[in-house]
Image 1 (cartoon, helix red, strand yellow):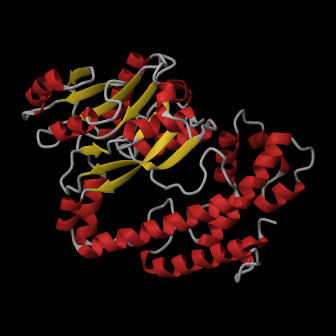
Image 2: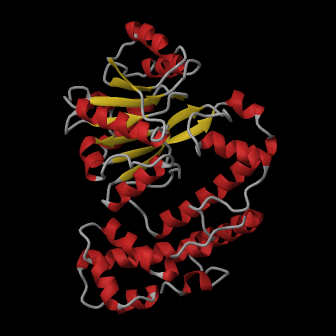
Image 3: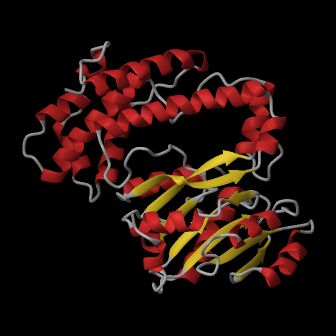
Length: 372
């Protein structure tokens, strides 16, 4: 394990970018949590203050006198038709990249979040150990969680159970040295760290209204960034149901309080599909690395022509090659899971994990058949 002490002499600039809009209730606790970092003088903080009409700006200006870090304030008024959480984070991170320079490290969180005391150090150590980007783990604060319907919390816990089981299947079938188990499955804007170089290579934060965090990690995967899903890098977020961003977490929770979702999140799929997908990805990567002349096994498994597969494998990164194959192969098209099948899929995932642990054929042999 790399010690942060060994990094203190480095000249790398670290900048934390936070998009802010009318956060008079949360912004001071957010800044205080950053001030409470063990290495609070090792980074700078940049706030993008977008069209704040409450007391946020005076609160921030007053707090800046007491912060142990340099606090940069950028006030703007994004056009109403363009204003969004995604655009605000994109601009904030671009400004942070300018401050940090080409060798810098960029971090971001939300204005209603509170980072754990070792949040900064865990991010920086993960990057020092070889990660290009770090996805932090996010939890809702206990006070807000207590105000939400218990059924909503329990449903989300079961969904996260399935997500973690599917990810463990992936880790067992196709281990990633840069992202070893245990890890988590979240891609939240409340906790991202990335080198400035990889930030640029991935094209920055995608210019989309919502979901920019997930889209950014997909962009990182396309350029083969080494991504660490660090369980120790923790951020606590508010559980408010009236948020600042349309389509964000607050809207999602409010919708689910009115009516349960029909389908699970589209990042989830049946355990059988996950196992098949990861085995095919492993096979495709082997062909991409060695530029094999014979790719009959891959074309047959993906049910694609040799020409299509060879064009995809000609991509400069494996992530880009795999994206093309996923888009073109009907075998890899994702099947959504009905919410009513959640418990069934948890049991199916448990079957696959048991088979992998015991090194025995899965009870449902067809899980692996199409990928062999």
